[in-house]
Structure formats: C-alpha cells, structure tokens
Amino acid sequence: MALHNNGFVHSVDINKDSIKQAQAEVEKQGLQNVVKIYHSDSLDFLENFSKKIDLLYLDSYDYSKSDIDIQKKSQEHHLEEFKRVENQLHEKSIVLIDDCDLPIGGKGRLAIAYKLGRDWKVVMES
Image 1 (tube, one colour):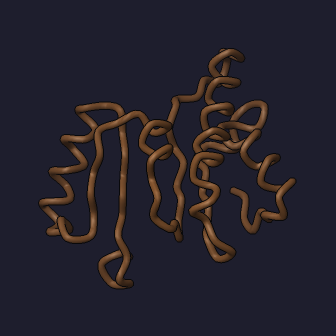
Image 2: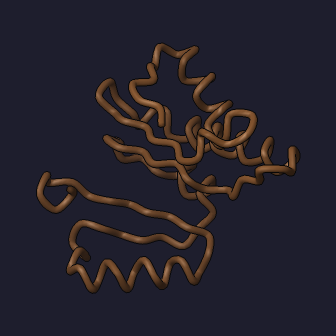
C-alpha cells in the first residue's frame, strides 16, 4: 500500500531475529525506498517519533491466555504506545490493535477505553 500511495512504513521490533527476517523480506520485495525497519523497544522508539501517522498498527508485547499478570502488562504496554504517539495522529488516522479478542479484552482493552474517552470510535471489531 505504501508503495502505491506515496506512503512510508516505519516498523519496529525488539527481537533481532524478527528484524533480520523483516529486512530480508523488504529487500526481496524491493521496498527499501518505502519501508524502514528499526531494532528498538517500541516505547523508546515511539517516544521520539515525530512524524504524522496515518496508520498505527500495535502488536507488541506478547499476550497470555492464562497469566493475568502478563495480560495486564500487555494491555498497559499497548496503552502507553498509543499515548506516546497520540499527538502525531490526526482525524483520519486509523489505529489497529491485534489480539483484542483474547481473555479480558486482549491487548487493546486499556487503549480502546482510553481512546473512546477521547472521542475516537471503534469502526470495526473482529
């Protein structure tokens, strides 16, 4: 999509193996001019990200179907990610959060509640 819509993709991951795989795919697809892969903790990266965001996809911090402590930490992490770039979002921005259909609201429970309190709306759930 970025290639055909004058866009640019910034992707961040803390796992070095994931970075290597993603970078290899970017090169294989010839997308070096529209995709940049960063090796960093997402919170650190987003703290210093200053560009406007049209599409924000949050899918970090693994979630557990049974460990309530991990569930809460994942939800808090996703909320904090959103807060760190909230000022870079605009009225047409789209925010996607993966794994929201997991126990106790999945990864997005806190972030969604926070956004709804700030006049964002959920347009699709799956």
